[in-house]
Amino acid sequence: MTSARRGDFIVPFLTVVTDALAIEASFLLSFWLRFRSTLLDHLGFVREAAPAVQGYLIGSAVVVLAWLMLFDARAMYRARRNVNMSDEMVNVVKVVSQGMLLVLSAAFFYREFSYSRIVFGLLWMFSISLIFAGRAAVRAFERAQYRKGRHLQQAILLGCDMPANQVYVRLQGHASFGFHITGYFADTPAHEELTLARAPYFGPLSRAPAYIRDHGIELAFIAVRTGDHQALFEVIAECEGVNIEFMLVPDVLEILSSQVRIRELEGIPFLRIKGMPFTMWGRFTKRLFDVVVSGVTLVLSSPVFLVIALIIKLDSRGPVFFRQKRVGLDGQEFTMYKFRSMAQGSERFDAHARLGIRNDPRRTSVGSFLRRMSLDELPQIYNVWKGEMSLVGPRPERTRFVEEFRRVVPKYLDRHRVKTGMTGWAQVNGLRGDTSIEERIKYDLYYIENWSLTFDIKILLRTLRAAVMSKEGASL
Image (cartoon, rainbow, N blue to C red; front, side, top):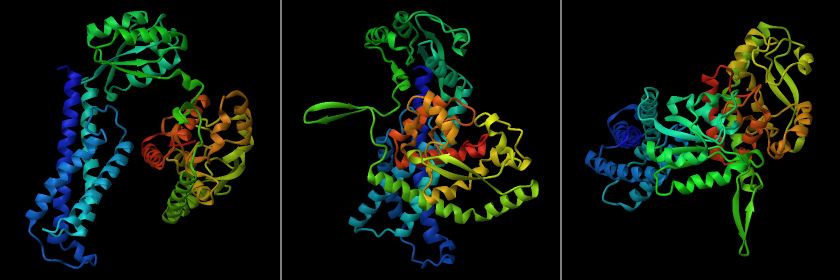
């Protein structure tokens, strides 16, 4: 068994063990709080006589087995390198919630033993917390092993242009992802200006199948040009019977960032390359989510607003809030609010400043801190509550930038098919400030065509993490 294969067994095995222990611990902790502790008495719950703990132990054994099967059904015990923790949190909440429905249904029909509903409520809360904590610990262990060079999956890269270079830079520069790209195959070596040129060049694509078989390569990243597709098909055909995974970076993303689906009408298959961003129900649920979260946040963060406003006034002359016209849904202008982070009158020099410039000398000392922590964006919660923005969506641009980009960036105006957001898929993937607008558009369009409420929650969780850990904040 190769080192990578051992790692792909150890990590899922540890995950199963920690999940089982977390579920059992949640059961015991919930039972103890309800029947052995006085904590709930102080919260107004009526004290009940403690039932036999054996009934809960037997029930917990059944629940552990059933919930592990649910996790396995959602492919959460397979070898999954570089798992994002915001995705993990969402999936844990989903599986535990589904598991609780099964538990409640079974308890309703099982009359031999009476289970406490309060215990089940505590079980749901503790299970989510402890399972996620266990998975976070396993992930930390997994990444530590990768950083030490253990259990790395050996991979090759097919291609030599910009898409291939992007794959190499992002994956090879992060050992904690669990991949080691040994080199690349292409008809010509990569241009010397590309980082990929530093990697070993193994020759044309036609040599790849032999190298894959001789060196036991289990993963190949494909990032070839349209003209190389025939050679690529031959590589895949020659690898028939070989245990290798091919992962494609589609060059058609340069033209279409939408989710491609097949739809059949009266027996005729149609390839849908662009669809409506939201259904009526989708618009309703997204707006309801925005209203509830923004309303609660406005109330809870009002003391923070007052403190920031006071600090801004003490630090420099000028208004507390910065107002600026931005372009939103359907190309309509609206006034976006931010805490002022620059010296008064700095907006006069906007035409001479780059978009999202880092370390802008016009910032005040307090403004630099607000930008670094993304606190200057907080007033946009009011824009969300009013319905001018959403919590998640493409970031709004100024009118002059919209007019400029629409002429030079393909599909730019498609981002205005939805409300702009406080944060977005591009921003949580590092595309903010003075970065490629073309790359940001690709991520924006991917978000629009693949929207779901779960996707929004995932982006918000990653934004919170970025706001704490990033030096430049989580958005523009």
